[in-house]
Amino acid sequence: MQLSCANHTVSPPLVDIPRDYNAAHDLLARNVQRAAKVAFIDATSGEQITYGELSTQAHRFANALRTFGFAPESRVLIAMLDTPEWPVVFLGCILAGVVPVGANTLLTSADFDYMLRDSRAQGLVVSHTLLPAFDGLLDTNNPAGPLKNVIVAGVENCASNACLRQLLRGPAAIETVANTYADDICFWLYSSGSTGAPKGTVHLHSHLMQTAELYGRGVLGIQESDVVYSAAKLFFAYGLGNGLTFPMSVGATAVLLPARPTTAEVFGLLKTYQPTIFYGVPTLYAALLGDADRPAKSEVNLRVCTSAGEALPAEIGKKWTAHYDCEILDGIGSTEMLHIFLSNRPGQVRYGTTGQAVPGYALRIVGDDGKPCGVGEIGELQISGPSAAIMYWNNRAKTKATFAGEWTRSGDKYTVDADGYYTYGGRSDDMLKVGGIYVSPFEVEACLMTHACVFEVAVIGVLDADELVKPKAYVVFKPGMTASTDELKAHVKQQLAPYKYPRWFEFVGELPKTATGKIQRFKLRQQA
Image (tube, rainbow, N blue to C red; front, side, top):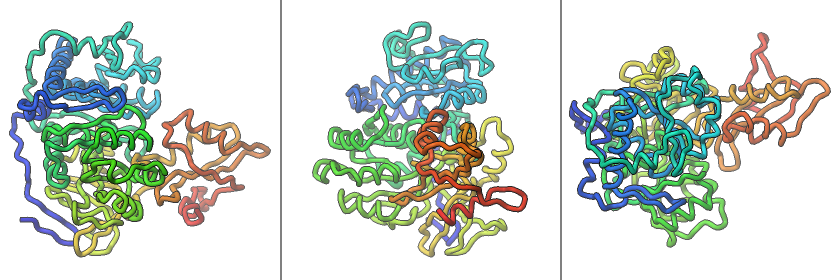
């Protein structure tokens, strides 16, 4: 029985996970009878790995970690492209009781340096194409941390570092599983969060299967016969569930794309591999619909699509459904909750809303006064559910601010109607969601301030033609100096992850400020 009111949806727990539990062992054991079935496909190389091979290689990697001297609960940073080697490493770490730490491969050397220092990772597994980003960070004298081993993925020979492919061709796998508990720390994912500084979000062994059962099976209805593709990468919480946990929980096949998901790449993949479930983000759906070469409905095999990361404009959802006769289930999740906790459901989609609470999660909307909001009243969305992270590593203040008892604060403003459908109302802070990824306007401003010509700058979020948020910068130049839009864009792209650059610049004589000199960003938003 589910009880609901305008502000609080309560569902009974749907997943019973035993006390003695290893998440990787569970995911692999579910597929013992599917040893010959393809588990993962690399859409670029065509490489495939069966469930039997996946289990063997994951155990080999676990054995290698033990041989290298990695103790239970030590940490390994994963900076890898989406290939079948990614799940091998992730699952192998967990089998060995080692904690894998997923890293966004789009970040800079400074971000990776911070993550190595913050996590005190003893190991690094890195795709060979990403090695240059770690130049200068792997010196044993670097205070970033006590790295025992650097393991390079994606090549046969790795010079002075260990080579993942050679490790995976090692001795016969000894299937030893670490004695872990459901409530043991299992893995981390780094989230930018509200400050722009990466935060190590710590999850338990039980969390992966909770999301697979509650959303993967409960909402999507994923089954063994499905083929799935997620545009969101495995290092994202959204992508980890989409492309690894959900398909493995039922023995489905996942297609991985190491490259950036351009419209050409995505359409080629949809036509070649015929996925039945496609996980996207609003920015990508808008680009796909705007591509004159988009395939016809008859050329693809879509059963259901999902969207998360930022609110899906209603018009995009309607156009997609009209063209492909397939609904987009818009929802919201977070790194803190691991996956989607609020979503539209098949056959019950209301475009323009984020849907209803995923069974198994409780939601409430709270006003600035801390009191529950009524129907139609805007407030902060808060979540209670079995997949909530236990903390941000080494960040007690932000942990206390986000995880308030059983409730996790989303930082998102919402309203809810009498039918229990929630509608997004913006962020509670100045953070922007660009292509589904948080961008701190303050980080972009700080970057622009390093340009020789810039005196002052303010960055806000502005809707583009598809009603999706992108950064816009208001720039005040130093007297007698100037710079072009292209020059400023290039300046940001050289220092920050590419998706963070402002799409528009407006050059102004001064910025609106309070009497005490604080920039009034709300005035810039009003005139944007």
